[in-house]
Amino acid sequence: MVKTKCYDTPADEKNRRRISQSLTQRYPFLKHEIIGKSHCGRTIDSYSLGNENEQVLMCAAFHGMEWLTSLVLFRFLERVCEAFEKDSGICEINVARFLSRRGLIIVPCVNPDGVEISLNRECAAGKFEQRVEHIAAGKAHRWQANAVGVDINHNFSAGWKSLHEKEISSGITGPSLTQYGGQYPESEPETKALTSLCRKRNIRHAAAFHSQGEEIYWYYGENTPNRSRLMAEVLARTSGYALSSPRGLAVGGGFKDWFIEELKRPAFTIEIGLGRNPLPCSKLNEIYSRLEEMMTLYIIM
Image (cartoon, rainbow, N blue to C red; front, side):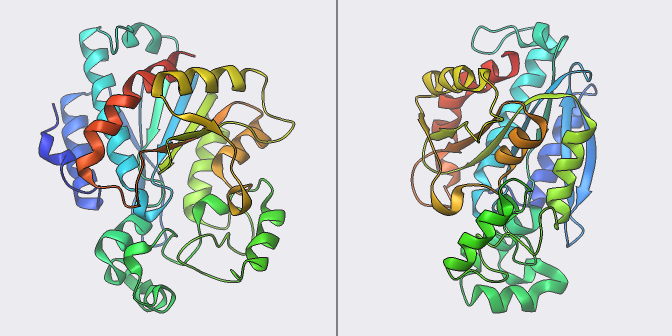
């Protein structure tokens, strides 16, 4: 087991490395890859196990203040590795058996620079420190974007143009703490890392973990697969979260939207927990306990 204290502290770069090292050393079957690097050169890591011919994807920490989502996925990854090693189950579901047919990929932190800035303020932006200081205007602890002020979840090429027009109408015309989608879709290395991963692999369905709201988004336009609704209902019933639809500046530009539009396969946005971002580590156990069965079923659907 990864020492509990790893989950008692925020998911900054140092803690993520500590968890990663512990997991990969204990479970040699766990495959660790670097799928890209951020503007500041921080690695964007993926972890996978099971059948590589067909996989399901979970990814988190698209936004700086939403780092608790990384800890949720790391904790679930640890449970899956334990079950795989022992040929046992999670929530009475034999995960090891299903992983022989379908693999799992987890990307715990899509936006490592944003997380570091939110936790450690402007100095964490390296060569972009002055830019972040100017944009943040004393509110770096509320940082959601990447190191150059682009919101990763506004940078995917699904409804990007329409969303960009909404941003401008809302007064967001350039790099910002949040909700600026960049100069063009997939302009950011973090976005490219995730789209490249999805285009290379046979990913059956994908989930993006955000916070907060205890909601699940599943629909995006006419390309939404028929099975998406039923899958979303299963996820909602097992977690107690509500099925919902995003509004305003939350429509378009996101990973879930892009995955559905380009790959025409199910994708979901899962808003974990309730409260004000950043959700504290003290909420992790409560949030995780509600989601473990849902995440396990997500693998086998």
